[in-house]
Length: 275
Image 1 (cartoon, rainbow, N blue to C red):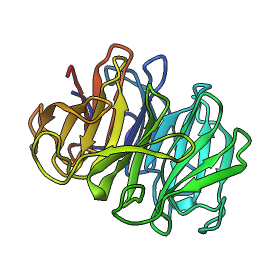
Image 2 (cartoon, rainbow, N blue to C red):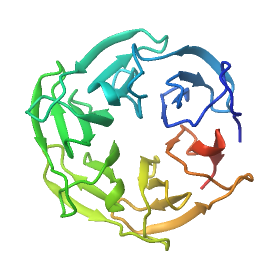
Image 3 (cartoon, rainbow, N blue to C red):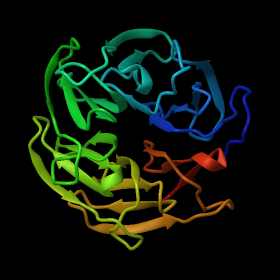
């Protein structure tokens, strides 16, 4: 367990998202809009940087692209930004707010597949997934606000599974939805509740090397482990401030050793667990 509340380099204030690269460097963005880099033990590596403007709000999604660059969902500025490990912005996708094809609303997360396609999750004005090609050209979008299968209520994060499908944390519908990368619904699992297999505001998800899916639940203050088909394999955590407990966790990542790093947001720290 590591981290403390503060605004100095290495400190955290309500950390919101995490990504981990092939060298087990952890990228974390917090409520101050700072993006910081740490090793897997919590040692601050630097640098620290921010997106160009964050007066309207902070980024809320991070992931690593196929080239090892950091994808930053600049949520309130309707765009995806790509950075190298030194904090240099390499490119921007989007930036034109709206609901027309190719326009974007609040961006919660983005991932890139091995073929170079980008998938961007949106909520607010749009409840959908937008797909762009490697050059940032719009390809297609799917989904709409709602509760029916294939619809979304605050899609919070995404991950591409070992099967090549797109797994989406449909937070306010308290479920995980699985789609092909062309937008065909494959399955969904989860329902609102506190029991095993039930979910309360799933905010982030990540796979381990064995193909198991970890889901962090903001509402239940815990991490739950599933098979890719949605069978619950166990839960960890619960509300609290002491080690092993969580308070409104937002995100998680799995390192090369299979350990799960949980962003314990309201406790301003990260906890590493062997699930």
